[in-house]
Image 1: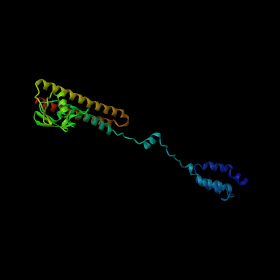
Image 2: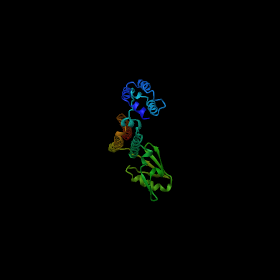
Image 3: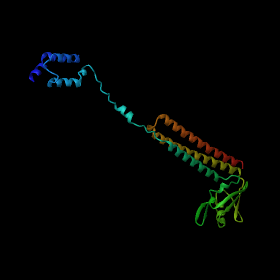
Length: 268
C-alpha cells in the first residue's frame, strides 16, 4: 500500500494535480495512463476517483453564486400588512351631534310666540299634576281652532285647572279661557316691539346652534388629525373636506329654519 501511495504523490503527479485546476478532464486521462499498476479497484485510487466523481473537478471551471439574502426592508415589505383605519364612525358621530343641535333649535323656535296660532307653541310648557311634572303635550291635545285661537283638551278633565294655571304662568303672555272640558287660548297679535324682540331671540338661537355645529366639526377634525400617521395625506384631506361639507349643510339648514321663523313673526 505504501508503494502506490508514493507513486501517487510523486513530483510528476503533483504537477499534474496542480495543472488539473485548469483542465480536470485531461488530468483524469493522464493520471489514468501514468498509473498502470493502480487498478480502479485500488483503495487509494478508488477513493480519489470516487471523490473526483462526486466533486467532478468541475468546481474549478464553474463559479457558483449563492442566493442573495433578502434585506430586512424586503422582508418588511413582504410581511407587513398595512391596516387602513376606519374613519366612518367619526363622520357618523359628527353628523349625529349636528343633527341633535338642529332638533334643539327646532324646539327653541317652537317656544317663540308669533301672531298666529300654532299647535306646537305650547309643547314646552310644563304642567304639574298630582305632584308630577310633565310637558303639556303629554296630558292634553292641542289643536288650532282659528288663525289666532287654540284649543287645549286634557285627557283627564280633572286636570283642566292645572293646565290653565301652567299656561297663564308661561312667558308667552297668553290668557286661556275654560270652555266646558277644554281650554280656548286666544293668540293676541304682536306689537312692533314684540316683533323686534322675538326676531332678536331667533337670531341668538340661530347663532347658538351654529356654534354647536362648529364644535362638533372641530371635534371630528381633531380626531382625524390624531390619526394622521395611520393614513395617506390624500385620504386625510378628503375626509376633512367631507366633514366641512357636512358642517355647511347643517349650518344652512339652521339658517333656513331661522329665516322661516323670522318671516312668520314679521308677517303676523
